[in-house]
Image (cartoon, rainbow, N blue to C red; front, side, top):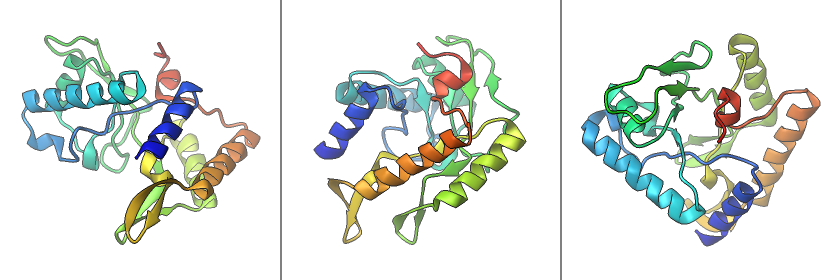
Length: 201
């Protein structure tokens, strides 16, 4: 998907967003051994660096499932920001997991996803209405003090006959731009994971 990859590269080079790992394969990581989890994370991060010239410290587990082996594997793979879904793991603001033996990072910061820019429904991705997203964001901020919006790169690909094409969906980009502009008008600070937890390198 060269057009999409180039669009992501452009946005990333302009520091518009941060890149995260979603696994090498879309599998339940809790069914993998600690060694396989760590190997998968390292392999995915190597591909991230190959595509975008940078490694990621963020892991968003497939299906939102993770366990203690996931946490220790992240630490050994040099990652320290975890984001699952709030409906699987209620946050206590931004929590952190303690250091495990042989880890390279002292703690893992957990900032769970709270709402989705697009929802996978009936076999295809459907954009959530802006009003719905803003309502979710307002609720999250009043409840937890922050909100995490999940955005997938393929949410910005045109869908043709049930498949994603290598063509950027300009309407989706406009929708994201509208969401960002409305949030700015509401004086909502927008930041990356690293900026939010104060660990931006």
